[in-house]
Amino acid sequence: MDSHTNKLYHLHGCDSRQILENYFSGKPEMVFGDDSLKFPIENLTKTFKSGHIKGDILIDLSHGSLVHHLYSACEFFKNIIVLKIQDRCILELKRWVDTRTGAFHWGHAAQLHADVEGKSDKIEDKEGKVRSALQHVVKCDLEKENITEPIDLPPADCIISAWLLDYICKDQDDYVRYLRKFSNLLKPGGHFIIIGSLNATYITAGKDRIYLFKYDEEFARKALAGEGFVIDRWEVKKRTNVSDLIDYKAVIFIAAHKEK
Image 1: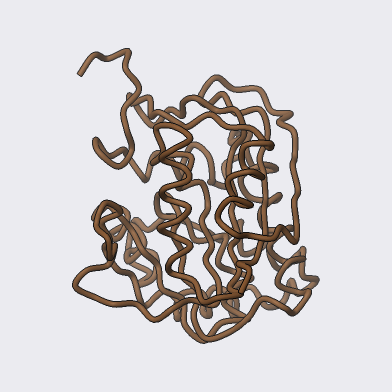
Image 2: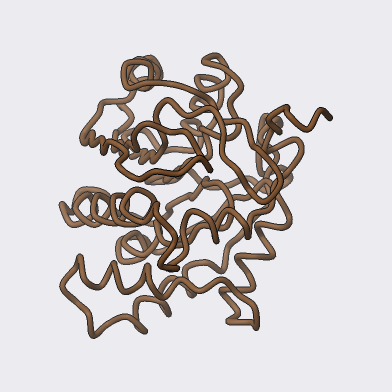
């Protein structure tokens, strides 16, 4: 492959640990914290606190080995099922769940959650709840009709998808196709939460440049409406940090429900 060609995440893979270090760590030089950590955490907390998104099953379909977007969710669902397309992401997650040496440190995200919720004394409880919730991590193949074959998942009350659609879609048709696939995992009336980056074309992980699907607010609205979703919450935060590691213009948070 030409070194100047952006790699495709789900075909060529990427260094999931480097993604965490570059874009989600608590290091002082990590400039993306307001967009990648604080913005989703605040919006997820507000969304779940409203009390109408809860139930038995939440499915997480997110890129890499992210954990921080599930801190709020674990209070409202009996079971969280995490679907991953790459083995290395599963290994990275399990390293954290099992508190093994070398696991990525998410303490800064737990602290941020505790601060947002006003429960700074509950950080260890919060991390324990998330670890307990992450016992169901399943490999999936997004190109199969049943993406978790041979396992048949029960319909979910809610799906969270953080940045995955940005990584796996080559064009608008792909976005709609995957949106429909994810939607098929939901109960009628189920909720769909999407976190993404607007108008991005690439992200850097180590020596690799990964292709990102470029889309805007108008397209996202049309795609969701076309698949029968009603939007309940729509938040956009314009980018203020400066870095050439990634070229997004804003981050977006969408909470929607599927019409019955």
